[in-house]
Image (cartoon, rainbow, N blue to C red; front, top):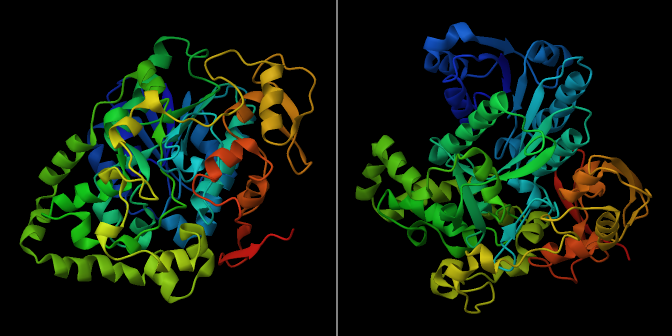
Length: 511
């Protein structure tokens, strides 16, 4: 039995292969870009299993390459993705891989007489920005990808293509933030870390646990029929309750290895206050109940990380001021940093990430004047109990128009559409996999499976263009409004978009 894998040189991909090679009955076809410097690493780390591995050099957006990859395989695990910060630096590559590549792969599988089963890795980034007002998310929540996040936009379109495909057996897994061995090195060459809101809810999973999940899915599927439990469904891949933290915690855990804290190396205005993509998964347990993969906590990870990277201990003897100047502030030169946006008067991003330059300027450099969730303070200084907030029993969930725990029929589907400000045009639905006709709040008609809409998809301009029109749409969409207005004012009227050169732009919506 053969398994085709894309994205195998990535942090999750390596762990997936590490777990799957433990199954002696499997052989593998690995798609790797011809110029990927990690080809030698893949061969070296799998030296004992090279007789079971076929490496295919090529691009996922190339039809002939995909045909060669999936020929004769039983499973396809698609993890190929151009992710931040590379997606920000090379948006055309993100479009080619995350969107066009998925379309090519899916199209090839659809035409096969004997179709392999597809496991498609999506992302939590589709849910967009969340804060303490509504930190918990479940499958079905609105997909409000953050303005100027080209990664999320292309992943949104790629996921929609999979859910609407004619592949007989597929599943979509929305991967949460992932802890991996290259965490610090990947984040010290670009200003991406400044996008992390200090108060953002973040649920982590380790690369090892994510790899184990994929292996366990294939293990289970080879033994039993998972059609009712797994295939044709969408899941949130999280690390569990003990991995639900805040953006501040994440940065702080890393700095503790060098004997410091966020407050030693950062100032409050260094980082965005909104427009991130972080959440806690209310339904994180669903996948774990099926496949039992959640093993490692964030504490376990950082303990092991410090053991494997003893070089960071040197930081404990370096003056904190020097680290702040030469390790952190040097990243202010990155076009991805907040400081760069301010210096170069990038008003579009300052509005998207702060609500305007005036609000950015109003942030004090004094930590005692900044409201931190980990200190039980809400964004406006109100007193909160973080421990209670992190208990899913107290979750303030978005009303998505139906109860995910109950059977959904035509009545519930009509309600979803009406809450979106639209209509269900189809008169009947025999199965949630039926493709139905819908009308959105702009009067545009579109086709989508009932389940696709139940999974949070609702047609809007982001599905066809790199633009974000949620200020306007939320005014007539009750589902969007609940999440969008947690971090945006109802009086905001901005249309965000990339121009043909991928320069960030925004303009006032004409009323």
